[in-house]
Image 1 (cartoon, helix red, strand yellow):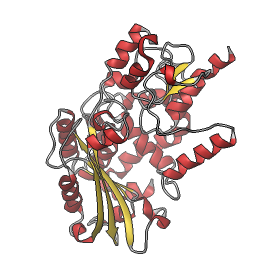
Image 2 (cartoon, one colour):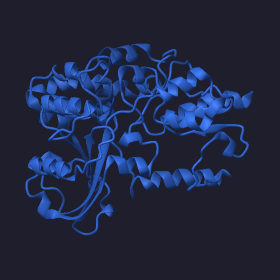
Image 3 (cartoon, rainbow, N blue to C red):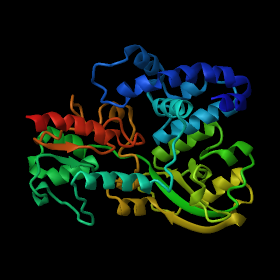
Length: 369
């Protein structure tokens, strides 16, 4: 935390007063925040302390700081919500991300994120499981008999797969699930890396490009309303800084994605490059390779990315609190032995693995019965 606090100047002490206790409470908070909302809290004091701020709009929390730097730093973290930052509870994601950064840092998988998938697949095989890919499942009837079925799908897809076996109230909730803004992804090969004007960005694994708090708030509101911003919010990944083996000599892999409207059919490559160039003049001359993927292409690549929505649903206050429907067991589909475990379930996207872990805990009592 010390490096961040020093970089914030006059707002450093105020930043530390907010995030030092949050980092201290982080281990306890994860027991409560990463579970469905209706539960008996294990750490009620820590949860209440977090909740008083998490329920506020991100703009309200950000304005506790006076400098543009501190406000913009929090706005960038809060923008991971991919929804207007003026809404209730829009500060929660930013608080958890910054708290995690100060408590642990943001981890990087050696060799790329694919190594996480490979490790999980290897463990499953070791335990006697098998994986079949390249098959589209249209209904539960197409599956082999199983004691438990876990659907890692968007709610709408779960409704189609379950068909008439799904209780009516659950089917209506799943079909009414709202999806949010989309992503437009750009992968780059950059010689000598990105020449950021801000020295700190040259050492950061993740860089948020949005400008001031006010600019981030405006562009996120435009995106959620279905209008393509001239300068979209762009997230840039430079994980090679922590894992140099990803690079080839002086050629470094960079990935970036912009927040764009849901189902945006256009090419946002130039908007992404302009936003990077804005903070790193001369970067275009260093780019030796580029691959872009639009929101419609993302949806074809993964049917769960409905309209290019990579977070599993619009993060409205209602859908954050009651995802994917109002229920004490949000993972249960109402069909015995069939569970939903995607990012549409608590705690939502970004907390990788917890949706499935929680759904598994929900399914275990059924196996015992």
